[in-house]
Length: 409
Image: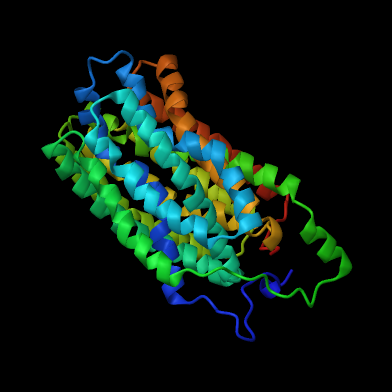
């Protein structure tokens, strides 16, 4: 279907989205990622603080990924509310309460209470992530979406680098100082209030009867396919984000500030991934997934085999570039399969699968550690090999000539 089939209307008195809305959406889309990226250099310090708590070595990584569980459970329901009642009000107020829930652990000193507050944060993230990705698809046509997603990939590293560096400094001051970073959502809330508007479905004047019928049916098969692939990719994507600080500790980097600085430097490779995403354009989905899993596999396996922090940094650059490809590729693929009427639910399922991977990733890593010599690096190697298996499957699909070359909506 042509790119313009489902977009914000472009005629009459209907408001059109522009650069201001794109900027707000790009920044807002970073909030759910901020919830975990900011804690990467803080994990060792938080683990040290709660070292006397039973099962702390498992619970602290779960603390980091706990919002993912809430998103995995609630995002589809958030999507249903979005499709039924609209986008704007839920997004605006979810962002406000994100700031409250995110900063709450600064005032707590119980590991279980902090985990509970992180689950509450995940409730707000479920709404934010679902609606931001839905609005990108609502406001812009296929080419516009790819531009916004690529811009998000280019801007994300700058935001992530600043956040990671700041979190390292704040963690050096206090084990829970990092949680004050979440207050950044308050000025974003103000910007949303004035700039975000409720989209209107474009008139379907050029549709055939078959296309109209198709748009009214929820695309179950397509959602199941991109949901399963997203869950697999997400479990790999979050391995370094959650466990990266511990991997650096195994090669002798054991201070939060230095860990944060090194990860911040490597994250500057993420824009390379965003540019690769932009270069791939509307190419075959199998080719795009081959790129995603191939780069993730090389990066993770290399980190697992690195003898020192210099080699780890070299392979981390590849892993970070892979991260820059992964998220926009998965989002764009999902958006292209969803008509306006089902976009909230469809993107809710995507968010659910993506953040279920965030929650399950620590358990997969724990399983990989138990299969090997018990080190984090050994687990990275196992996860890298699994990613390369995914790349091989994508390559087979590409060689078979499986076609899925461009957006449907």
